[in-house]
Image (cartoon, rainbow, N blue to C red; front, side, top):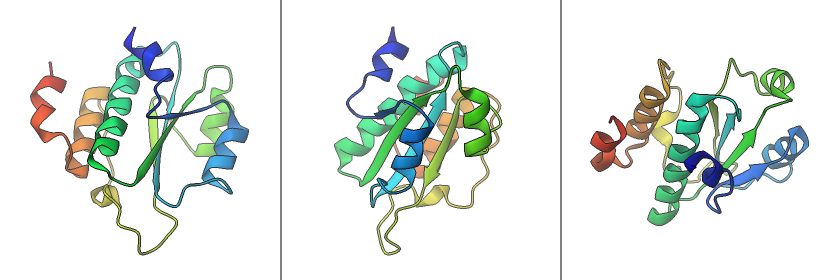
Length: 143
């Protein structure tokens, strides 16, 4: 299944728990921008969103854009994750700006944007369009 393959993708770092999240966002944070997707194993929307997230990561890497991607499967710790990361539900994606203030950020169109999420397709399409990526594949995502 695509979801299970996405959880093992080499394009996205898998975070095992809150300690890994704290380390990645804190002391171990890359100097580039960082996008983290939080998802649950039992969420059918997450099953469609995570493979798309991995595809976005693959696309950024293929273009040579300096942005890192990670994901965290939150089943069993969802209340703690929601509280720590200030999330309302799953799936959720947090994007952290680059540590270097003069770093060129490929997703700068996402700064100060509020994304209205009505479903996973709308969210992913809106985020991809704001980042100006994969527009040529929009028609395939809407199927």
